[in-house]
Length: 196
Image 1: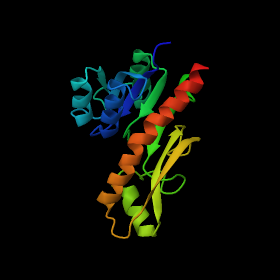
Image 2: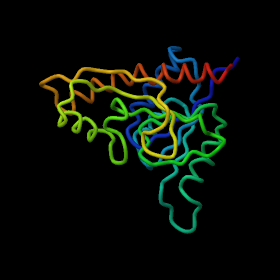
Image 3: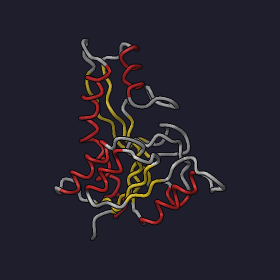
Image 4: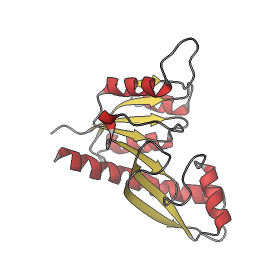
């Protein structure tokens, strides 16, 4: 059976994309990244994909002149790669999931949802909120994407401690280390279920 085909949606630096590229390249993740869709022209994620020989479609939210809605353009680009699974890796836009992709889109969030999720809660903002709350634990959540921010069914969570001397940057680094393990494992679980 051929490895599952992944399309990764990105909006920025592409550190999650790089983790998945590395793991598919060295065999730790039995999958093939067949395409990347990026919402930001010039993003570092595009360079990472090109360097790995993965085709990229850049689909900016706003286009000059008459254009179809952003979501329609994104899904048209995704469908062009014929993926088995769509993986959001630092994708910063609410993207309604069409019927043909329901249950086939994963997202990772840098907290233990439902805590510290929702609109506007991404990146450094999440870690600042965790520290401000006095929480002693944080982590990451891989979940199926739906039509709202951070609310789809959870696939897995991985916890990390919050240390008394943490800054948003030190906590972010610890959470990202957890993400690097959790996302490939979640992809394995989901694609193995899909193969049955």
